[in-house]
Image: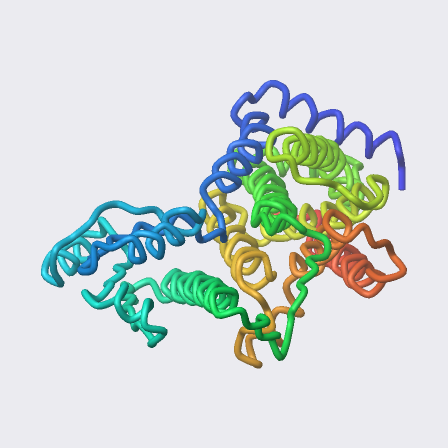
Length: 377
């Protein structure tokens, strides 16, 4: 390998990027835009569920029970209704997601020590949100029931009944249960996979379309020198993107980084080599910018978003799909970056994922080098 020829190719690519603001904007501006867009728009938190209440009792007890819903961060009272028809219209129009129905004898039943049933109606068209809403409602109702039982025991001078089982939950790694702490690290992996592959695939395809690849082929530059020379500038830009993403995650989204910064950038570098080489391979095969973009999106965006564990838990997928995820390199990078970000673990725990990422990078680099031939056909 001749380092002079390699640097000449890399310098040419650097000059081309600097002189083409569109390429530079896509390389740096697009990841920032996607991180802001997805970081704020994509959330797994389900709270402030719009709620309407039909309080047929209109008593102190019913108002106290209703305040348990409206006083929590999980429900937001949007209005009171006077019948099922009004409640149904509010849910149909998406003005409310759930409805609480309190019977007329609610306060009388509670005063006599009898059970007082209430009805909770949920729009099940969004099954995920509906499941959370039902769970929140059951939790609020259970807490209110425990308080009533405790007050009754005190009123009659009886010792409070001990609960047969007491659960003391302790949340590790994300104690505030903020979905952004889980989403942002995975989002960095998905964005870098897509952007890195698109950048190199388009630059190679553009060389073929403009006819400049024939000029490069006629020079003494060898195939592997051309491949590595084109990777160097985009690798530098990719690492700059990783730095920007990490800084945005820390200061814009306030996501804590508990692990080693050096390890984070080391695994990001390995991942970038693989993603850039994959894009290079796509560009060599396609030789057309439109086709290269389409192939790049199919090979990077869909697998990285759907099959990496970024948005959907892999254990919840069907078994055949779970096996397919082992072929998705973003799966390993998502596990690595989340382990470093949230758990602060190192290679002692993440060695397998790091090894698979190294195999991916080496395989893509070898395939791109092997596929490129210094001939026109």
